[in-house]
Image (spheres, helix red, strand yellow):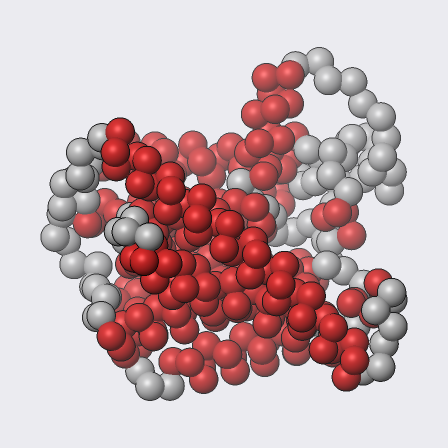
Length: 325
């Protein structure tokens, strides 16, 4: 498939709108928005989005490699992305993640904060729709891929919603939570469906499950010292007034937090790769070695579980020390 075909942009509004919307399903969005909700809204909102996102994305990634439906052919479409072209198409995990995150955010916050129900519903719908349409615009998915991803995510939300409180309570209070949060994701990653060629889906899945595991362990540890709310029972609070001072504090929390997460990711990634290369006697210049199961899974899991833990434990402590609470 020719992913490097030249193209002419005839409508820059749609071009930038959908390129931006497509980025809302990438790592850069996850590593900023999900921690932002933890640092500036509340732990319950962030925690539930992370749990739902991890489960939905795992099911979506595995479904791709089981169904093995190809992405749209080029030509006739022009593909604006190269990285994801090695993956299969059905379902669209961008559409799944966008639906899961936006509607989980809406469901949790509408029970906890006073704001118009219709406004939250429209915002969730617009967000998920833009991300879904962006995958068609960029030539990475068919309409069926996007509809399939959206419906799968919606069904998973509907089926899991009654158990949210129970799951949340277990992950916050059970002494088995840390072991469970590490053992289950690693088991799933090491037993990921095998393909005849290398695909980034296994690595991406490990990244997601690792980040989720680290964050959950961080929430569990925090709860041992300062109990967190684990109920979705309606107790609507008013949003605090948005002042310039509050906005500056929120921005400072965000910038400090993201800086620490990026440093953590870079440092742990290099450390994990160096140790694994040494253990398996692989040259550090061998880029292809990173694709091997015994290296890819542990280095990505260690890296992103450290990022998740840092976001939920280290960064909030740092915020306290800097008086950004």
